[in-house]
Length: 407
Image 1 (cartoon, one colour):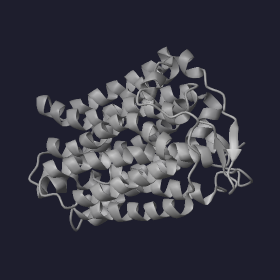
Image 2: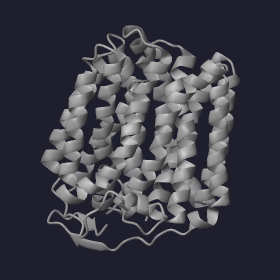
Image 3: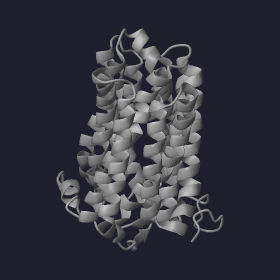
Image 4: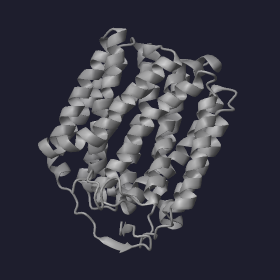
C-alpha cells in the first residue's frame, strides 16, 4: 500500500490520537534545533565560549542517550499515554527554567533535564504512532519522519524570530508550545494497553545482541556524529545574525523534511534501502568536507544541502531500527537510540575542541570520515542488515477503531 494514498489507511487519514502525538512530536523536535541560530547570542549574553555553549547539545543528548534505557521500563509499567505526558511535563518545566538561566552552567543543567523529558516523549511517541497509525509501519515511520523534519525546519526559525529580541524567549516559547501538546495528548490520546511483559532496564542492551540491530546502531552512531557536527558547530563557522542563521537552517530543515518523507521512499523502492543509505552517507561526507574547506557562500549552500542527505538517512535508519530485529519495537528503538545519541552528545563537545587543537577545517574533515565509517558498516554488515523481521500481527482494535500491535 502506498502510504500517501488518500484512501483508507492512507497517510492523511489518521485517528486524532495520532495527529495529537505527531503534533507534539513536531514541537519536541523543534527543541533540538531551536538553539542553533542563537548559539552566538547565548555565548555573548552569558559571557561563555563556543565550547561551553556547545555543551547545551552535549548535556541534552547525553541524558537522552542514558534515558533510553529507562523509557521502555517506565512506559511498560505506567502506559504510553502517561509516559508521553510525563516527558512533556519535564520539557515544559526545564525549557521554562532554561529561559531564566543566569549562567551557562545553569543553562546546561536545565537542558539536561529537558533531554530526560524529550527521551521519555520521543521514544514513546514513535511506539504510539507505530501502534495507532492507520496504514501500518510504513505510514507510521513517514508520519514520525514528517514530524521530525517539520520540527527541525521550524525550530531554527522559531529560535531566530524569538531570539532576535532575547535569547531567552525561544526557551519560553518552547515551554508554551509543549504545554499545548500536553493538553492535546490529554484530550485526544486514550491509554493504550500495556504490553503483556514489562520491559526491564537491560532489555534494550540485550536487544543489541542481534547483529542487524547492533550494526544499524553502530552505523547510526558514526552518522550522528556527522549530523550533529553540522547542527551544533556550523552556526559558529557561519557567524551570521539570528535571522540569517535561522533562514539557513530553516531551508536545511525543509530539505530534510522533503527528502525524508517524499524522496527517500521512492529511492528505496528503486534502489533498495542499503544502497540508498550507503550512497547518501558518502555524499554527505563529500558535502561536509566541502562545507569545511569552502568559502562562506559555499559553506551556506553545503549546510542547506546536507539536509537532503540527512533526511534520507533518517528515514532509512528508522526503518532499519524498527524492522531489522525480532525485538519489540519500543525495545529495539531504545537500544538503537541508546547507542546513536551518544554521538549526538560527543560531536558538539569534540568539534570545538578539535578546532582549538588544529584549525576550523579539521572538525569537518573528522565529520566526513565518520560519515564514510557509517557507510562502511553498512557495506560490511549488509547481510545482517538485510534480514528484516516480519510485520507483527494486530493484537486487537480499540473502541475508537485504532489498531494496536502486540509489541
